[in-house]
Image (cartoon, rainbow, N blue to C red):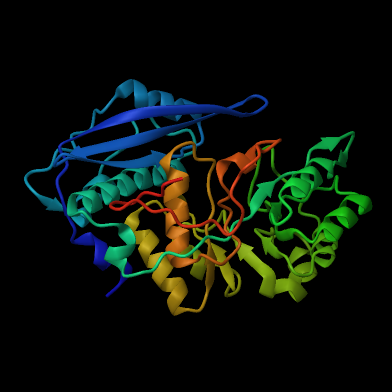
Length: 357
């Protein structure tokens, strides 16, 4: 039986829902907003988090309130409810980023429904799936600050001094000097390199330069190489010796996206919110297992329960890969003392789809 089939038949009664807005200043000039979906039914509550990136999309949703009629027509199943959500327009106004934002919001409702169905059943997710949760290996995703066109590795090394077992996923830029690269190599703490080759018109764009790509790949011969722009002139040739280390994140929303890659991958990033729906996500896990493709998880700067839910899934499906799911405190420029080290012990609620941080 496939993973989704184990879940789809769970009885589910939905009576109403409410919305909770969250926000946090996460960097200069960027106020991160998310919306927690609270589904109510049968004396229980299920929660999920909408991680749409544009603040105006959250403002519009929260201003509209619970305008969708989600009350069930008698007892239904989780699968029936998710299909119903898929047929609805979850945006009171057109989303700023189009289809990808629709996937994010759909996952918020699906994950809340999964949590509610499990809580109504009095069972935790791992028990229903028959999987034993494991401690989650994680990396801390960072972009080095730059001063006068030169990347500054000192803040990363300062964090590493306080958390000596911490591992990193880094965004390389042309500002990485030979000295910067040498310091990072000497740290021995770089597990993943994210070329950001599928971003266009954003503040994290990097040049599609084969010399730059090759220089980084050769400097870190044991690191995973995420999202190169293989369509860029000369880049496919430059990275051909490193194909076994190439992984994919931003392009992956479905099995079809995995199959459309230029070559069969050894590893892909399966972000629950990016897949958009519970059935698609479960199919992705099953497909990777059947085809011998490794998986790791990633977050999207969640402020609420979404990060814990992604960690929960990682503990069941890919606990020992470089999951970009570090506890939120690591995302701060100066992380506080006392943060948990990797691997992150699984702390799961007695019922539902919840990770007790």
